[in-house]
Length: 258
Image 1 (cartoon, one colour):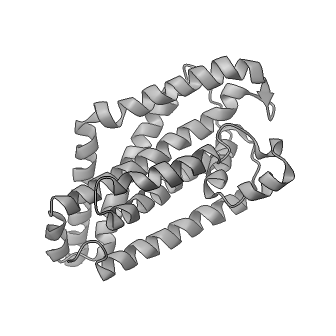
Image 2 (cartoon, one colour):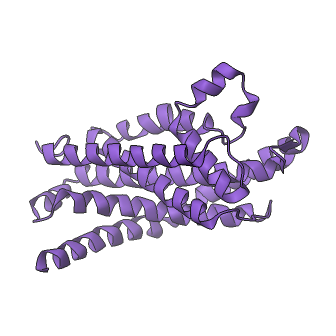
């Protein structure tokens, strides 16, 4: 019982530190995504969307809103953990956690929870911005909330793994630039895969972001190119795989213990 109390204090301390870290510089962490997404809504939703017309029975601006919200959640959950954990490595204060009597899962959970907190905050802000351009009539609050949180957990964990392997500040931008951004833009944020030729429809199915975007779109609009059971299997599968890998990296001390 005493150990559980200590673990809770440690977890709460890490999460509090992470929340304070991004909230103190909200002009850099929360405001830019809101402005960026507002521009997406204006350019793609209003200007280009007016020329495209309806998609899947919805106005184009309504159709892309779920993907844009989730895109902001993905990028910010990832960015918070990768930058914070690498900074701890760079400043060598990660050693304080390593010598503390804490199990590795508390360290991982604390950083991931901090990333989820930023992802949720930014997601809520972007959702509020979207209300200036569309009306949100949520189809399923349960699916919407579940995908929102689970996607944030997944990419926060991925950010942790990136930070473990990173040896410089340049390394923490490689994965977002060359992996995360292409997967997100090709994940059905701006289009339905039913518009693609059959070959590219099948090729798109290897992109995990496609399942998350479509599940979130189903939660908000009630339409999806992917069956919900498939989407949740993919999401849970990646969380389990990445979480297990992150725990293994911590146990081995990869990129941390010299």
